[in-house]
Image (cartoon, rainbow, N blue to C red; front, side, top):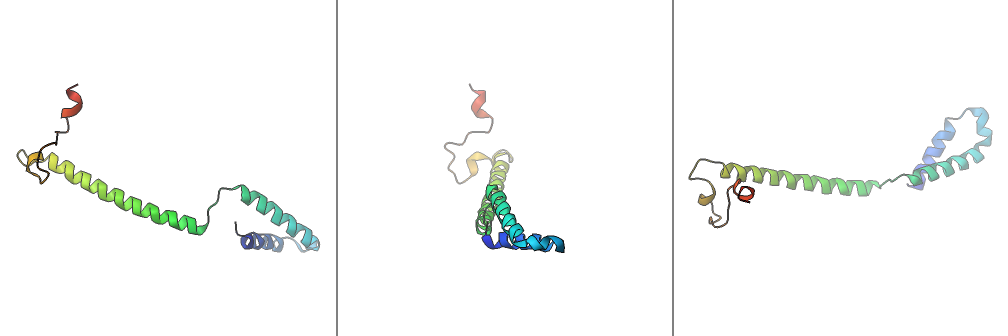
Length: 107
């Protein structure tokens, strides 16, 4: 975590202390920083830049998945259309397309 943010958190903690405890401010401040660094260092945190980069990757992946789902739905619809318009009438040339239920039943 950014040292500036740790210092900022430590400063806020010090400001929230009652005035009577502020006399030991230097000692408390260094202890706060040490505890914050140790605790936050154990957490599995990422930087904002890494998070934003992964968010963009996820958005692109979702868009691709949505496009593929739409394409699969179109293909399924064309395969289950009226007789005569199914597998043989597409631009794929026919040759290797099997009907959806033909594979495992013949074993």
